[in-house]
Amino acid sequence: MAALSLAACGGNAQGANSNAAAGGTTSGAAFEQAAPALAPFDAAAAVSSNGALIDISHTSEGYVAASATSSARLKFEVAQGGVSYYYDLPGDGTPIACPLNMGDGSYTFCVWENTSGTRYAALSDQVPATVQLADEFQPFLRPNCFCDFDESSESTRLASQLVAGAQNEGDALRAICEWVCANVTYDEQKAAALTDATGYVPDPDATIASGSGICFDYASLTAAMLRSVGIPCKIVTGDVAPDGIYHAWNMVFIDGSWVAASFTVNESTWTRVDLTFAAGGSSDFVGDGSSYTDRYVY
Image (tube, rainbow, N blue to C red; front, side, top):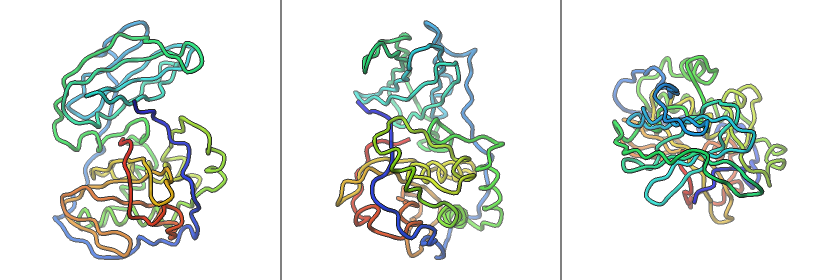
């Protein structure tokens, strides 16, 4: 059972803004910036039960959406093949979009309501759906509750500006990664304050405005910017050896390559990009940087 919360990364991001990701060479087909793929909530198409709405009308596009009203804390469950992801769901009716990150197959969705302590009871009926994605990238091209953006977001505007002169997807990836490394500083105080917290949700535009964040903020902002210009990007959380630091990073997929001091991003394969590590310029932050264990993917 996957508990979906990331408080903060451990460790120490020394030497922030060293811009370790800069430079290198790129290759690939001519870059054509795509319009942002969005994740709208369709209340009219949603399955309704006990004040909860579950919209399964966009499953081929890689996401499911839900909303509910309740004075109690709510969780939205996305389950497939014995694995469940639980997302915090606002009780004021604000919808959230959640990625169908486990690929094609039979899913069930349910809204749960807190009854006491850590106990929850089903608020909605379980809603089944057979998911067949239009392609494997759909969940990682759209906004979701951990990677929020739309056409008017600052992250979208900035990404569009940064990739305007890109010759290929490698160029576009490099431009966005270099900007994040150069302009976002690791926030030690925020990390300390969130050490024992759960349910932290990053906000890409807030990270741009503050110019600082924890690893989840780096990963969320990077994903929002890349997705908004049509480059598939995963947010991954997990552990990094040798110190077992709980961390967040990205996996990207481009049709060309980017070879630089910090990264070698190969053609047509998912490649790890850790911008917290790159911006900090210190292996102290994520162990030796060579052993990542994935837990959750968004």
